[in-house]
Image 1 (spheres, rainbow, N blue to C red):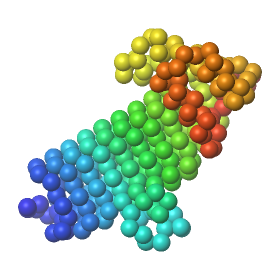
Image 2 (spheres, one colour):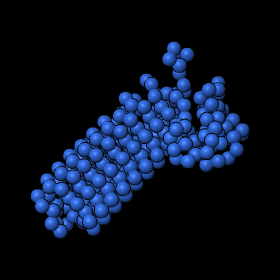
Image 3 (cartoon, rainbow, N blue to C red):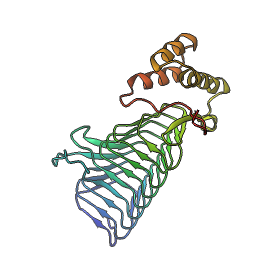
Image 4 (cartoon, rainbow, N blue to C red):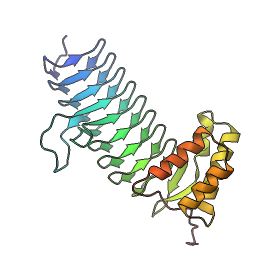
Length: 262
């Protein structure tokens, strides 16, 4: 294999039909899947595992050492799924002993200047808009969209959630919701996104009713979950929501607050 003017270690494992542009750097312990494109000045460091048909654009650094004082040089990884696009100047750090790897799933779009810290777990079809920063051990479930926001360590963001630009995310964001304002608050369900992904009106109405009980009644979360499971028939969406809330370690974002603070 010949990659003119690129710095490719001879022991790196490179798949078929891979293009590596001039001035890219591929270190020794790197695996690149078939059909990938690595842009000029991109750096893939030891421990990077790239799936098939990915793009890594100029200036991105994948597999950098964790920015965590607990890291002691242990062998860890970054795993990127198939068909994921990583745009300019993105940084994705390796894992630590906590989880051993940082993971980005299939079909994701990671826009320019995003930072994904150690041990984050990013699902499939996730969009991280430019300048988003994820601290260590953040979990982002499938189909979530985060717009230019800062996410606190250990936070979890549920599937199909959408977070407004410029948000400070300190609490878990439940599935199917929209989040905005400061402090971050529930502002409805992600109706447009759900319709685009084929959710029926019946399912969307069910999700809306669940969050009406959770956020617009006078019940605490435990009471609301009991009412939800008593009055809403079992469904995958209901169970995903109730399981998410019960398993939340940081607590979920607050309910709707009007512009007047009421």
